[in-house]
Amino acid sequence: MANNDSDILSTLVQAFSALSIFVFYFGWVWQDSYLQMFGVRVSAFDFPFYYFLIQGLKVNFPSQIENQTITQWEVYAWVINFTLVSFTLVANTSKRFKKWFSKHPLLSVMGVSLILAALFVAVHYVGANAGHERALSVLQSPVQLRAVSYEYIAESTVKPKRFYGYLLMLTKDTLYVLHATDLQAREIPDSHRNATPNLTIVRLDRLLYVRTAGYSPSDR
Image (cartoon, rainbow, N blue to C red; front, side, top):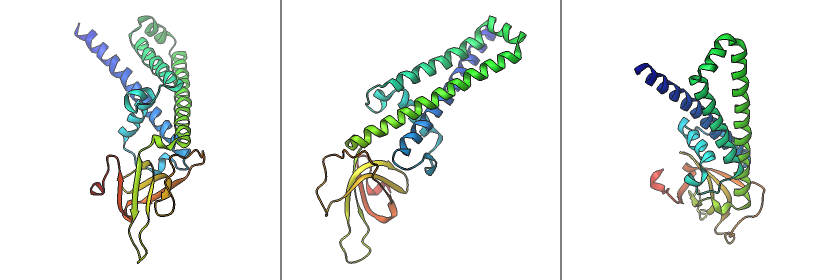
């Protein structure tokens, strides 16, 4: 009985370990595809490991995490993950499969490798398209992002410029803003229907203050 419990636990650990790898890759591909639409790559950021796991969860459960509507890409992601977990469980518990594997080890390894390769290709395709689609949605309606305002540190007697825009990304030392608008130059547009990326990259040490939802200058 103890051996059976141990085998079941080992099988579940393998299944969810494999699932974690796929969720991580989903998140990495999604984020890279998303950022590419704005002219930057994920390699430009020093994201921690868990960040991509969270992004991978967003691909699978967008309504629970970001209040987004479920698209076909989330459905495809569920199918891929279900296929992976089911395949792992069956391969580790089916006596028939184990018997066939022991008799044909080379064919079994090749078959498993092809299945995993196909699933990884599917993960890449789904994650890339999901990120691309989300970026297009943001470009068409940037008000989906949080608003951000900031002011540069005065370097002369000229009054420092204040800007308003939409927060694409905030790292520990850099601000990435879409459609930055000089508050002293013209009125703030209600929305931007332009599908061309208009990204401003500003180092936080150049700014007097930054204000957006959930962030204040004291956080710097």
